[in-house]
Amino acid sequence: MADEFEPKILGILCNWCTYAGADLAGTSRIQYPPNVRVVRVMCTGRIDPAFILEAFSLGADAVLVSGCHIGDCHYIAGNFKARRRIALTRKVLEEFGIDGKRLKMTFVSASEGALWAEVVKNMVNDIKKLGPTPVQKRVKAGAAHAAAGAADADLAELQKIGAGKKVEAAPVQKS
Image 1 (cartoon, rainbow, N blue to C red):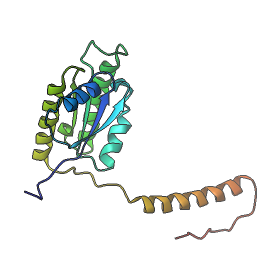
Image 2: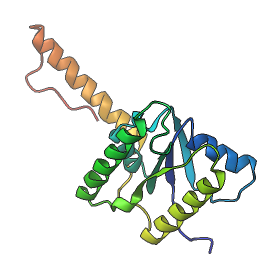
Image 3: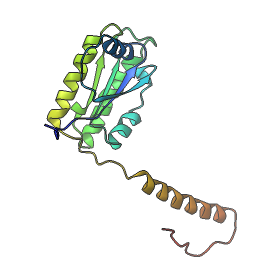
């Protein structure tokens, strides 16, 4: 089973509850799959849907957002905001042809290390059933830098035009 698909899952976790719950799972030596790469945010209400779309564009197979239980947010209503944003982001993903099951929101408190382990196990199993992400990874960094350099040259030409300086009639594309 060496070539079995192992999903790459981005976990965006609330600092005060879920991150502490994940830490508790680790210190309690509760076993769960190592497929989740964690990013800690102060509050799930801070998560911009662009972060999630970026994760998929960079090759994540799924995104797991987890925060305080409803009514227990350290920032009053951050988890309410996150829940609404995640629901809307899921609809956007589906419009792009990405299964909405690849984006999940859960609520895990600091004392629920075992629940965190269960959430991760379930997420990994669900994504294994779905298979690898249908999103093609972005172009390699070298190609992106080359394209950015060409764009900088074009902007420099536009600035010259705006300043009234003479420019070539047809600038030569650099390769």
